[in-house]
Image (tube, helix red, strand yellow):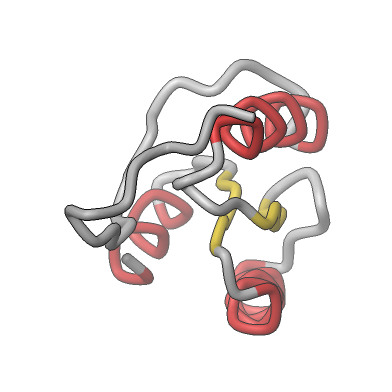
Length: 89
């Protein structure tokens, strides 16, 4: 996924990194911020557990706010075990 994000940013896209692992997600965000000289408006991080329905909406809303615009492309690379479904609380 890092290669996809790198290529998108090399073309001038702003991206939101998302992961259930906050430490890895923030490390990736900081790596790209340094590499491309960007701030939170160029690359941001939002924690998201794809098995939690509410996290999807939070991810989308937060990314649009932080990146100051609508989301145009979604790259989903989440690994979810087939026995796990989205929890609807």
